[in-house]
Image 1 (cartoon, rainbow, N blue to C red):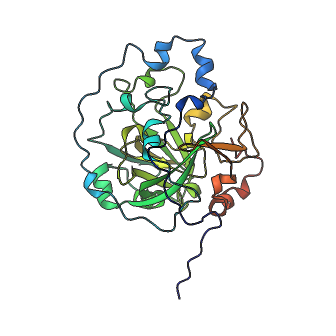
Image 2: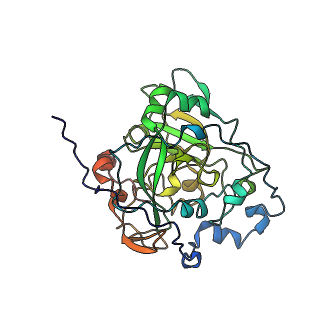
Image 3: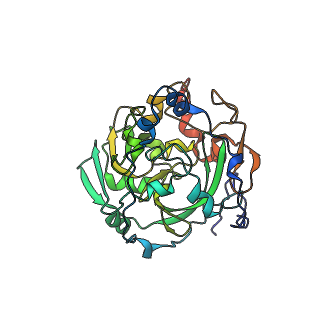
Length: 329
């Protein structure tokens, strides 16, 4: 007899919030943040790329559109309504383009075909794979995940994509590899934020091998039953729902396996505020604001923050051996 064990964080998914409900954007106050402090000392054009912005060229239809919607994996459910798609399309952090939450217009200029992903470092044999070939090798599934930003707002959404552990298996890393390093595209001609000297481009993030092969780690290629929108990280991005959102690198073009902890973009830019681990913990505040609660996009509801964003049962064991590491920053 098959017995399905429901995780402690999960209850049946409730109905989605009506899409006509629109949150007053002025109620969101952007964190002063590293960028704000830096702008006081540098010209706006150096950071935002003012004067360098180019009109978005018409983009061809996404050739993967016929794959979606994909079958939902029932093991990944939510304890809250799905955030309406309009919010996810209109409220994004994507520093490659600008520092506002309105990046859709700028991101529309990003060409996402052809899109080649390079795999290298400590692997049996380096290789490259096009995004469409990858989707044939590893067909996507849908999962319902929570998303928690370090700025203390949250969403819940239906990602479509590939379990990262399946991609790691395809990459065939050496047993001596301890980390996987992911980098985003580098194209300042269409991503004016990459002209900023405030960050070490391209955007770089990393996970331990144990994190990367955890069942929750996910490579998203779609959302809401369609290919991923450019402002959400098309054509492929990371989704690690127990960590703050800045860990989930967008527009990935390379995976490298290494035995050295990577120098990630935010940990380099703001080492006193943003660390390598970035695991969600309500009891560990950001240096400039509390993490005890979060603002839910779509309803403006204030909810208590959950340890590991509610996924402690699945991931807490990954960190028991780390001792004094700053796991929650």
